[in-house]
Length: 401
Image 1 (cartoon, one colour):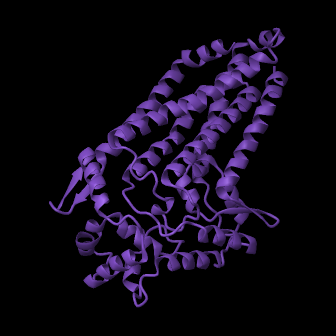
Image 2 (cartoon, helix red, strand yellow; image 1 turned 45 degrees about the vertical axis):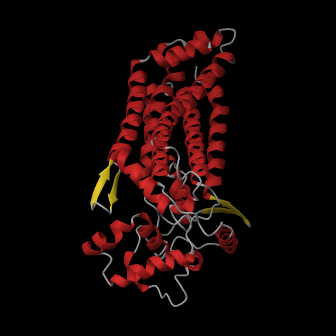
Image 3 (cartoon, one colour; image 1 turned 90 degrees about the horizontal axis):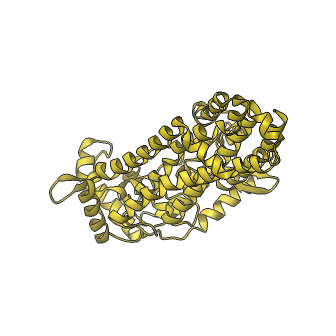
């Protein structure tokens, strides 16, 4: 039975086209990441692109500070302020920002309000250096100020404030620093898993619905193993296909990057992306968890598609629902006065896939005094949805015969 179900997935022309398209997308993106990488060479006053540029950046990173110490940040800010420029100007970009690279934006972001999507460059010009830059004190002050704000959609509870402040204070400081361009490429390669979900929706939609559409359902369900082994074979093959397709698409892309450049930066803290992230994770661990979330949501989407396929008896209707579930929530706005809706909105696949945003978002769910962070809630919700869909798929297929 299992062999027959595998055969049905790989015999459909639409499935083959979708699967190849997904892998072409992965290959094209990895090539684009590598070929399009561009780094400023201060010595030649020019940009070096592609593999050569990445390796140049890796060599330069070895010459820089490897720890974000208070003294290092104070020295950087003092140097910036000595120019006396408007940091939003083109002149400042050419003379200060471009030569400094990532460390400039990392530092500026630390002194920018958490509600702002982009770093306030001129915030660096306003720092009083009498007692040094106070980088880590500023980080905690910014987090506390954010948690104490009045939001139109609802404020943080006392338990939430205590939870997030404790997590932020428990992060290991000073942060290590280094070249993160390789881990950026790895992270973005994993992000492409979102688009592979569409392939899974296409391939899984007909699994049960095809039996209804072909009229074979009555015969299958009267067979000896029609109500048990057949159904579980379809489910097992669909899940194995989902996991296999995602891993075969993402892992080789990561391996290509690793073979070309190694995995420099894998042991850097996630705070190199955003200093306010309150988790003690390395970039490598974060990428692993990101991949795990991609797999979890992919499996849940598969279970949901199987449920719809069994219930609706239509491959087209199931496909339409799957595509809508993946794309539709991207157009759902966040509410200005309804915190409950916002917390639901955060859990849709199109938002839950942004693991880097998830790490830096101080989003939590409370049950009494119990605080559940965003990352954990995503796992709980998708496990629950997947389990419920799995339970009702068999009943739905038998009932709808």
